[in-house]
Length: 417
Ligand code: HEM
Figure 1 (cartoon, rainbow, N blue to C red):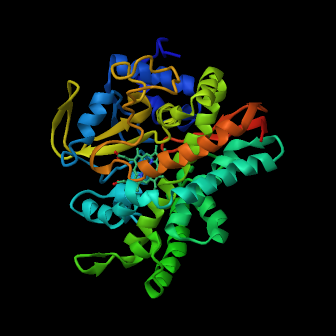
Figure 2 (figure 1 turned 180 degrees about the vertical axis):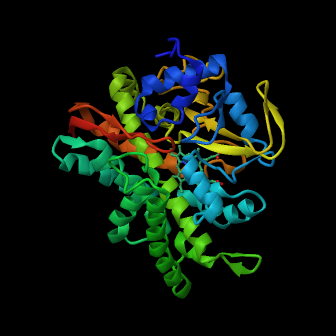
Figure 3 (figure 1 turned 180 degrees about the horizontal axis):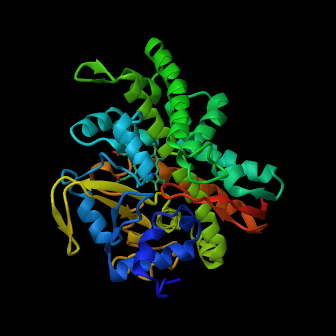
């Protein structure tokens, strides 16, 4: 699919603000290809539902914006939300101030609280646990007796279990956190959302805060050496983090580390089924698993966008961006940019180099990238040799979202050892 069909460029821009477009790869990529080709820095002005924004669709332009984190900042509009939500935040302030909502110098200080936990050396210590959880997930597929909804029954639990074990939270709480995560991140999708009004989203946040404030109190009284204890007991300029800042750290780790990775795993398996030659290659050459995982992350691009707002006038791709205007960094588009990827619409488990931007770039680059890679590699290292055959057992379905998402249903029939 090269997206070569004619698309009206204003319609293409509007597509980026339509959650249903992200559940329809063909429609999305037809729009993105047109934008890259004809107007790579395009003003999308879909009033009244959204405030206007510039869509940045080329790989090089996304990097140009992200590497200048003082010229292009995350506040006040880190992701695309409705104009009503933007207004509500401007009037009431933000309850959730996670790493993606803040800029330097605060961002640097907050990121350093947890950064050590996500470095390769620290993560090597939990690799055995990750492999154990990967094996448990594939064992579950075997127990399900040759038929399952892989997205719902396998891919969803595994990354959440990894991240919540790292945080040190009890397994009995996992279902509750899973539900809250999906309500928060899947809030464009009718099947997943509790509600979409600012008031309803606020209630989801309050539930989150309530849960994590209790954990903080406990870890301050009884530190245990887990990540939750590091967060609860961290000090910046000699002071403990406020309750809201502590809760925000938990929220970003629990949410960012979850749907992103499960979407990669489900979408990765779906891609291997769609291109059985690539599945065979992986069976014959298991050493390709790391590059296969990298390709899955490019292919799926679970995070659809982040936004930045210009602090000064700036010329990008021949367009004049004025101070105060927002730009949408369109990762699915950057990851199919013909200027960077040979044959970008080909799924190639041996792709090298693979300079995808699925983890973003610069000061806010994904903190969990090493962990996400480790999880997906462990899962496919366990799954590929054990899976004798696999075929669809129904239509796959993708979530409606403009932010984070991927397959929400992947019904499969299979034989597994
Ligand atoms: C930030 C993608 C997994 C934690 C981000 C960003 C992207 C991203 C695009 C924003 C980067 C930017 O603004 O330049 C992904 C993808 C994942 C994944 C595609 C899986 C395949 C994880 C995991 C964790 C995690 C497992 C574990 C905790 C974070 C955090 C941030 C972040 C804390 C905020 C960083 C900051 O603003 O400084 N991620 N992520 N992510 N991610 Fe991930």
